[in-house]
Length: 112
Length: 113
Image 1 (tube, each protein chain N blue to C red):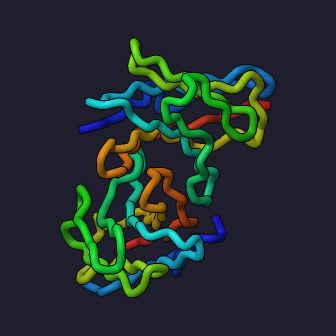
Image 2: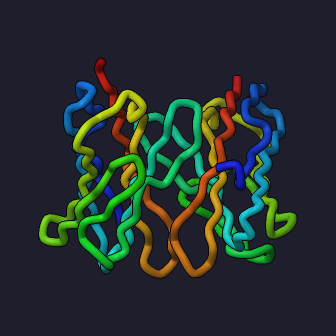
């Protein structure tokens, strides 16, 4: 969905490096989410934010941090990347009164 | 807590034949259920959503799903597969109070010419 953009789309980095993935949306939604996708596991929630001042851990937050810079921007950081963080990362948005989420195109991250 | 189980990790069909993707859910309350599709190197696209208004839900691209409470199932069907249906499909359930989504492991659909 072009209303939710993610940068970069692909990234290769080395173990121990800090990396930031960025998500922007023009849908005007208040809620934003970060997921990772691994083969055979579906998508798992890393962090979510219901508004700029509300940040919550998901089921697999260890090794990650987030920043909600504005209603439209939600960044995911890996402070010290490790190989098992190699995955496809998705950002999603939703409007508070509904549970339908809209996904960005994904960022493919490889940690060597 | 809610969860979904997709009963097939891979489904292969011939073009023009029916497609059936099976999903069972677990939820303490009346759930919202979704099917999303992911084409290769693309993000997830919403196919359809069930919210208790009607048990048979019609989605985009000719897909539909039927909610069966007695069987705790939400199977996705399409009468006639097209080559463009080759993708990965996710069954998803929403938490009643927090709207967090729980994803199934996914079903990969291959369409043979």
